Image (cartoon, rainbow, N blue to C red; front, side, top):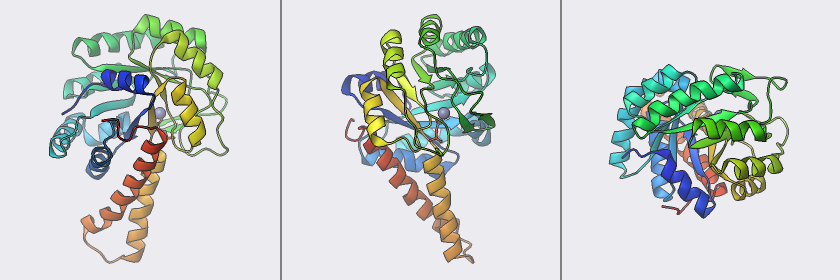
Length: 283
Ligand code: G3H
Ligand code: ZN
């Protein structure tokens, strides 16, 4: 069954862990995320970025998520990650997503607040949770590239105003995290994180989960991170394993055989991410 984000994040805040949000682009990826979470008794968020949602089709993503949740007897959140417009968020809500992010971080704050308010109003009317973002996270996600110069840390005052005026259920922040593989070890601004959490009193979301050292993840959880997004390391593991299999067995015509090592590699990355987030055994 598909559930909304809010109760999961409240539980995570109380019990000091983060719920992993893993991006999926196809059936195999979605099933592995769900299967791994069930086998480790971990809560989980299955995410599609706007591009992944368009690729699958929101209705297909919902149908797949519902039937896989039923097959594996799981309660999962189906979340739109980095929703790129009001329209995209509405399409996903209408299709049956239980949570959406509207990423208006590239807009001036007033405009970000205005559109996020509209998304929240429509989403909350039908019991769907909303994540917003303040500050700009560096790196590449979907068709969006944010350069080092354009990236900006979340401002405590702006975050406080944003949460107050939009009533989002969770807030994504830029505190030294970035999308994709880090070129040098990140150093999260823990003081900023603590100030934002204390002044907003909301579950905080850490994007760019690939490559953040475990000790920093652990400390960030203590300071209010309740959701962590992980994509690149899982995607890379899946594709590398499929590629290696094809190198060993180039004549194969069997798709299932090629997917198998991809699935295993993904499951390992998800398990190690969940370990880092302390979410194993929280169900
Ligand atoms: O929204 C998705 C992410 O923030 C994932 O970031 O690819 O660096 O793990 P990542
Ligand atoms: Zn992200």
